[in-house]
Amino acid sequence: MADLPALSPDQSDAWASVSALLAQAGVGLDDGDLAPANPDRAPSVLAITGKAGSGKTLLLAALTKALRKAGVDIVSPDWEGKRKKDRRTLAILAPTNKAASVLRAKGVPATTIHRILYTPVYDPEFEKVAEWLSGQGDRPAAGQLTDIQLDRAKESYGLHGSVPAALAAAGLRGSDFITGWKRREEPLDLGFIDESSMLDERQFDDLREIFPTLVLFGDPAQLPPVQGQGGGMVFERLPRDKVKALTRVHRQATDSPILDLAHALADPALEFDAFEDMVQEAARRDERVHVSGRVDSDLMARSPVLVWRNATRIKLIHAFRTAHGAPETELLPGEPLICDGIELPLKHRKKRLDLEARGLIKGAQVIYLGPGKRPGFSRLHVIGAEEPQVSAASIVKIEKEGEEEPFIPYAAQMGATFLHGAAVTIHKAQGSQWDTVQVFAPDIFVAAKVGRVEAGQPLWKRLAYVAITRASHELRWIVANRLARPQAPLGIEDLKAPPSALALAAED
Image (cartoon, rainbow, N blue to C red; front, top):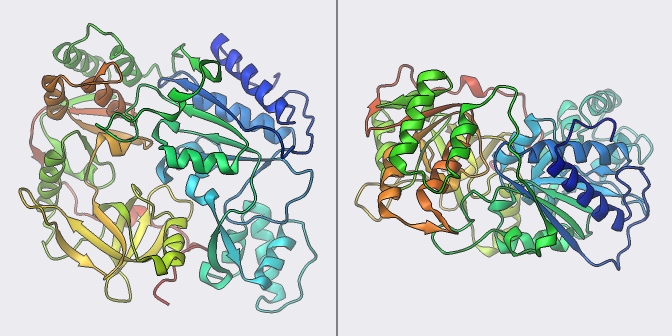
């Protein structure tokens, strides 16, 4: 453990538990010894839990580094070669694109659960190219790719280690070499699952089918996966000796006032009015906390306002669109959307997998870039996706106050469905993080007045905790139902990205 950062006693205890779990699976975390996987070994699950600032991500990153040093392969979701008998594998997963991107920004090679459940099927000729790039085969003869293109692909692979990126550098699109997607047939070895408080039972069952050894990282202070239906978190149902709690809250290098406020909510005697006084005091002494009487409409374009009530969400979205002069009959480039699922009949299962594998899963945050080439298609930027630029048949629904049926300004007959994303519920914001977050305090106040309790804690405290810990740098506590006029028109200049190998070719 010489290369590791200094660990607190509770982190060291969690490390020892993970080490023992991996040793049973034939992976020597400390000595680097790797034994072949034993298919007859009973599945095992361990959970590392702790509130924000307790060091869960630090521990996950240190464990990943140690396993990579020991020779364990980090699984990439974009291509997998032939499985070797003695190969040991690790995948680091998160439930959403945004949660995975938060980890990647911290140097942890994470992807989404969906991208591991389903794997791409390559055209046979490009499968040979992929094997050569990854060192599992000989250089193929020039065919659809010239020698110059092969050299370009090899150079790119040496820089990025990504097969799709390498083929994109050779001038290909995803539709040129990926023919479809299939559910994973062979299991992997080790799975590290971040934001596991968001997992539902179905996702957990899917993961246990693939990984005989799972380590869950989660925050017990967050909201359960299904709000208001009494559903707990999957790690709460594990035996007590299979849950290691990180109880020490580490002082951050920046001494975060946001984390101080989050942990103050653990005081059972704290009432809403006293907490709001604490927010006001934090704002007076630290520029990373602001109290405002108006919602910033410019910020809503990239960082949604977090609310509790659906009615509040709808009102703020309409105020945002009105402030930006958005016509009722169409979307403006730069408007934020939230994927609400895929509406396709069963016979189009392949297309559903294609859309979901490229990031259009329920809850994904996207920015509308403009209409596609065919009626009903939209060009989209998927926030947090490794390959963000896509084009897909879209159904956009904008809900109206007091009306059951939403207004649909833009729609294909079937495809990916979207709700507006300028404001989202706190529950749906779990797993995401933004540099600056606006929390709509009047909704938290209403939740406090309702007096509802979830898992032994007042609901308003869970809502406030989740909402303010979505902010990585700056918290804006909004105390009135007013919207500031935008200072700049909506745009997409901040979303420019190089052409993606996995850009959808659904219109071709």
